[in-house]
Image (cartoon, rainbow, N blue to C red; front, side, top):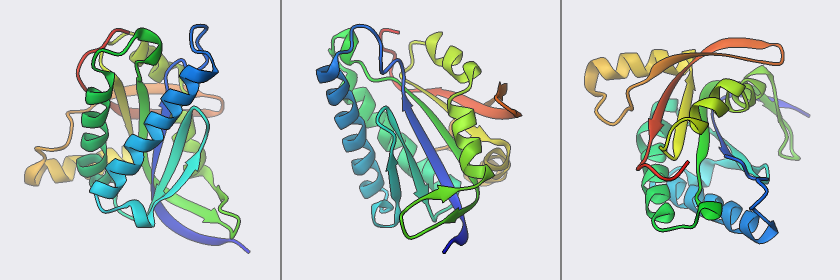
Length: 194
């Protein structure tokens, strides 16, 4: 039996996970490091207990009952700091670079831990878009973050109050499969080899 609720979705995807120089041992390191950083960021933000983390192998989808501003101001900065520390002096094949997407919307879920709905799909459309891939490929920053228009509306309202911790976002049109939309993006973290 399905239940329905509104969630904030955080999608994470490792850039070039299956690159030719990343054998199974390199992939295991990258996946383990990402999941460890994610766990720490969620715990430090006091969100771990309520988070549902769906492992995707080369990334994850985190489903949270909080608002998106909490993710942007508490989880993303912690994840960025951990990534900066991890990437220091790593060989190219172990440098971790991520595409992140934040969206808020409805989903149906069942007792098996499955989540479905257009808003879940939308997160993956953002994170897997060629536009996002290209943006990360053309920067030396380790993170390209995208937020949906709905989240950007909350960001604009919060920035009017005190938006110090919220990254400055620029618009980005994308198209993936049957989805055509605008996301709002930022590049985060200390520069690393692309």
